[in-house]
Image: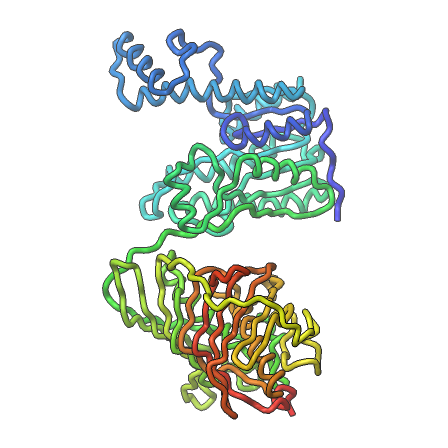
Length: 578
């Protein structure tokens, strides 16, 4: 844990791309809370005097009309490109002046340099001259960048250079202009595109990921410097139109409000007691749904499994051996289907069966196969139906089937229905609470922390049990090869624990999952928040039990429903490996 340098009135920040747009907003907010000195860099020209015809004209349409008239009076043809270029020059200069004015209003000292950060000689000369009057540079905020979005096969070398050099060469040049030993703060404006990737932004993703890695290298070399690469998501700025906001919402992409994002930057610069070098602010850039082709395809995906790569399995031990939860097999199949068709989600799984299961002992295969067969497509409604089977070969080469399931992908998930038989009235029959359910000898629940917890049993009868649940999200490293995405194998497993408690309380029996008829998901089950499960028992025999599970919020709105789930009843001693 290192202590970060404070921002003082004498601190001098170079801010690339800092006179316009989001970087300017961030700089203004920083100046308001920490008045100091700023050197803003930008390619736009700062006009000392605007053309006479532009004065007191702030309406875009009117100003463009005046530009057209001016060009015609000069004997030039007012092409759309010329008019737009002239307008952007005036508008850009005005925005720069506004930024400078707002920064000066905070009591800060600020200068603007019209310079391209990729022009090494010009940048060196102008920064050297400015530092003589402003003082030594103690901080850099590198916000400059360019976009040239298009599919990779359509990108040119010039496109790549334009995007790449602004980020990477720009940082290299900025660092070469200062005395590195004086540097107390280095903030790199990276992007979630570098962290998650994004369609049409291969060059932008590469450049930003290099910024991320550069942050770690600088931090290693200068451990006392506060270094952070902030991977920003989409900002709620003028570039995000209402139509684009609607598309982002449809794709589950969060927008960063300007006042929230700018304060996050200030908070990060103020933080003196953590060493986070890479900070991701924003959701993944989920691609739009791919267009479906009518032909039916088949796939085979290979996967190697091992215990060390999946720490959560130590919390799912049966008869002394870690066992893959059936719900993780469901997420394995459904997640793979979703990756084949980005933008689609697994709305339903049907006819799921545990055939052999997967136990992490001497029977663990060296390789597992997931075979997926498309059995139906509705191109117009954006739906795909799969049949999936997970299998391996034993040492003798014989095929062993472990799990099977059908999966329905949909681009548009239906609105969640409401569970009509909602009953959250407590009967106080079972008074055990929280982690006490999982204490050895207190119940039939063998699950470790990765699959806990039932917080309380709200009510129980011969036909039904209602539980209040809460899944404390485990780390991605603990989740291993079965990360919780849309279908969460951990919360789904937790949702079935009520049936175990019902069997234990009324019959002193336990069960293991065998199959289910239908699973439908309308929304993600919440992590780190309370949810409820209403488990209705359909039938019970000496060897098995059938139940329907409804996972919902406090008002009964469904996250998902698991219907026709069949459990096989076993002696309790089986769980202890006796």
